[in-house]
Length: 291
Ligand SMILES: Cc1ncc(COP(=O)(O)O)c(C=O)c1O
Image: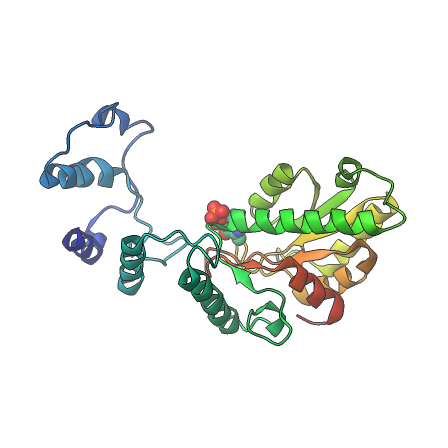
């Protein structure tokens, strides 16, 4: 297998970039039931080469001019092999101390490499959080939104204005925001979270601006709604625009009573997935003027 991978990576440029197959091409080529008997290794690898590879889009191909040229360096592959060999389920610190501790340490390396403010790091004085590696960008936005939703409901229940309302009614008041340039996962995640989402128009350079957000929040608050979450993107999927955090942060600060939680999903396309701790993010936005 290692030989096959080495050969594949060394000669990937000889393959066509996108497959020449139609939908449903694979089903007639494979048995409809899982085999009861094992097969010779050569037959399995022959199936990989002749049945699977023709349907592979070669994302790591030198002529694939799209996203994600990452995750398959030799060190990365060796790391995956070691991790698979250890086969450890790192649910929690007790389930595997090294897994949990390594994640926190490496998340800090990553945060520092991106020059994130110290509030986002585990190992900074008084830190309450840090990052958690998620499986995908959509998942990261979803987890952030769920956390922000839970936090918003809890805080509203503590407020004399809202305390008499039940949680379902409060849920109906929550408003999330994103840009028209945001990835569709923001919309999907808002549907899963059962919250309203306002999709804002970016400027002519596809950048979400603070003024646009402010106007939207003002009109929503006037309608009795509660802004609780803003999804911004650094490197949008379509054109790699950067939402203007310098303007958006201070706008969020104007709604401390609404306890706006600001979430910056890091675009997978370039950097990987990190879930910033929403509480820290909120603290950052409500206690500092710049990001
Ligand atoms: C900016 C951004 N957000 C979210 C996503 C969704 O990523 P995933 O499919 O891994 O959830 C993408 C994927 O291209 C993206 O570019």
